Image 1 (cartoon, rainbow, N blue to C red):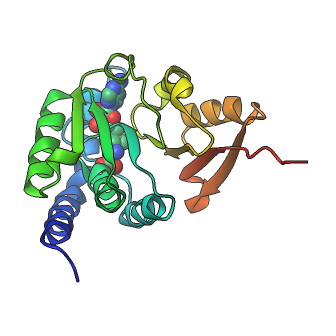
Image 2 (tube, rainbow, N blue to C red):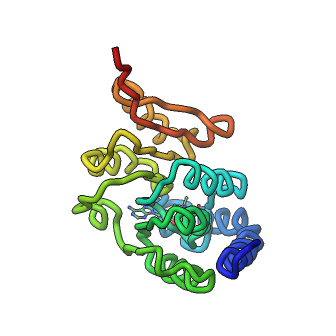
Length: 213
Ligand SMILES: C[S@@+](CC[C@H](N)C(=O)[O-])C[C@H]1O[C@@H](n2cnc3c(N)ncnc32)[C@H](O)[C@@H]1O
């Protein structure tokens, strides 16, 4: 039977995906307004840029299957991906730290988490992830990288001491050039194993198991 909380999450997600249908237009507007400026997160302050529904559903299943409890997310936007993560941690009794640079986006995400009835499971840190996650010292079971791609390596390295044998790192927009440079670096480290998903849109990194002799 579907619980009241699960129903609230599903309804909130449905509303957000409906609204995100205008993303393409908002992205084009952002480009047009900033045509002579380098692209910044603020260029897309009105756009969701979210993971797909299929990715979200799979993440939810992945969290429950692997009993993932401690999640850190880089790039909240309006909270679509975080809501899927929340669906998972409700079942595993875990929690989420998510971080967003643009204040107005973070505030809307907080509203969405309240509407979905999951705000007590989610800590939203507003600001640059390089600062908001800097002093993180808790073990991380799942790190979702879905912010600005040129920061993936710095954030990964900054949080690496919190990884353990069962940690997963989910990299969205893995096909973008900055992500590719990051993944090339990680793939050269024999400690990590990479698995491509959704025809290259995402990559899942895990720590290689040491074979017992
Ligand atoms: C692709 S969107 C995230 C989409 C979200 N994960 C989802 O699926 O609904 C990337 C977000 O990262 C944020 N961002 C970019 N640079 C950041 C930084 N240095 N620190 C925190 N957030 C950042 C952007 O403002 C943007 O909202």
